[in-house]
Image 1 (cartoon, rainbow, N blue to C red):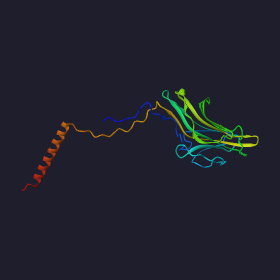
Image 2: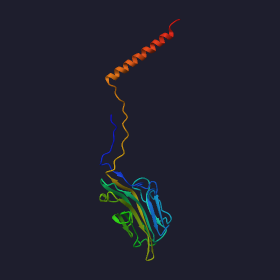
Image 3: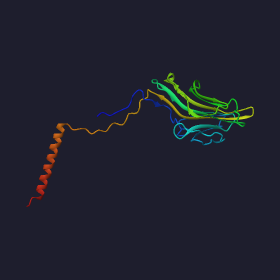
Image 4: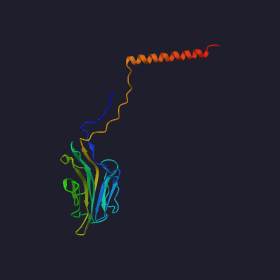
Length: 233
């Protein structure tokens, strides 16, 4: 029986590494402006962030952890991103979950603070915005509408989340972005082959005859040997 494989063209593979942050920040790159003013943490539900401990994390949409940003500065820009190479063929579709946290001194919402999740090229040129929230539009982590990136096939795209904290009119606005389950599927990537089925061949009639003769000969030889062994001298 031939080995069974699954390699249909409609099978889609996630091109994003560590998509749900179950391995922390592995495979993701971060930046802080000014330097050393941002933190990025993969947390479970209801955990508060350091160093401000200003944001409570939400229920992850996939796995046990989700990413959340925080900043020690009231005028900081925190980024986290991953570059993904899209195959030249197939359909490329991005799905992710995102949310927004903000804290300010008067809890009235500092203007000019907010978060974005975007797709850009590696030079920072915008391709599309997946998620955006500003001011007091706090929002829990939730799946966002799918984005078709098929037009970008054959290029490298950057999935990037940016949180901009600010100081405006005496308000302290610490913005944080939450991110989880980042899935960029491409239907041209073949599924891994399934393990070959283990089968036991069925003997043909001629093979059965040979096996029967071998068994008879073996039995006769054994019988003759036992007879000689017990023959009186």
